[in-house]
Length: 314
Ligand SMILES: Nc1ncnc2c1ncn2[C@@H]1O[C@H](COP(=O)(O)OP(=O)(O)OP(=O)(O)O)[C@@H](O)[C@H]1O
Ligand SMILES: [Mg+2]
Image (tube, rainbow, N blue to C red; front, side, top):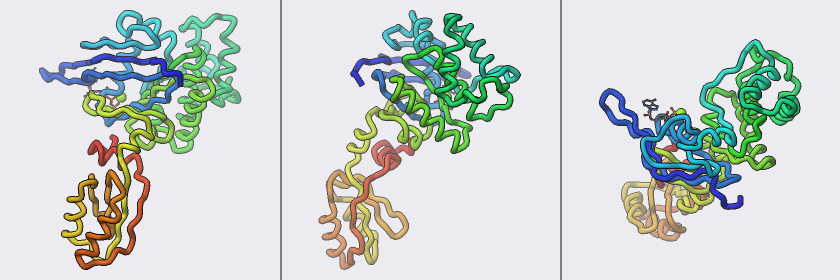
């Protein structure tokens, strides 16, 4: 990462009016994504992910605010953005009767790829997405996962600086999902392509992204690296005791460093800013019970979102 911004927005806003109601699909978004990042844009259904992507690509007009992608203004220079940015929408289609090659050739022509480079670029892209074997097979014989990889090849032949992927693994089976995710990582790692990936699945962005922005009701409520999110959390303590009663729970909850206490089966899970094991053990024995287990476990990112933001991450 060289610290150069590739996406920058300032108070970017999109308001829709539906049946006299105002919907703030994207609400004063201030977002910076740096070159080389594998950015996860996380948010539940309807939080504004697609709307953001469409504005960044200049495919819809913002209501207010501004933005730049690869240095180009999203309102005045969106044509240039579409030249350097690849985009795989939530839904798209290929010509089912044409082969993989013919489909890519068709789109290459539409995108003004120099004629003498078309064949070479198609072969190169199909190689990367591991579809070379099926270069002449009609797309109607492709699985959903293969079509998704073909969509990626279609974007790659234009040699993009950045690729926008809108919920790219929705509808893929676990095997195809894993394959697609490792492909995205490879594009980011080996070809240094910045990736902007929208998803409503926390476990997905956790697995592949190095930075996450969390969107809720059109607003970016958190943005950080995975490590950054984990550090916000502090620690998680697991307690088992001879009897976990109400008094014990109340006393632990009242400790200064404790953020949240959850009873899970016979155990107590305590989220705290510091190691509070000593205080906990004093409370338990002070109330006449014995400690059976008292240990620190690393929290999961799901827990971080749940505890810090009160969200399950979509
Ligand atoms: N063309 C439109 N007209 C009216 N409202 C719209 C339009 N497009 C989006 N919205 C509304 O804007 C909000 C954000 O929608 P958007 O599609 O950006 O969310 P999303 O995060 O992509 O959701 P999903 O996970 O379902 O794809 C939603 O409330 C949606 O209903
Ligand atoms: Mg969407």
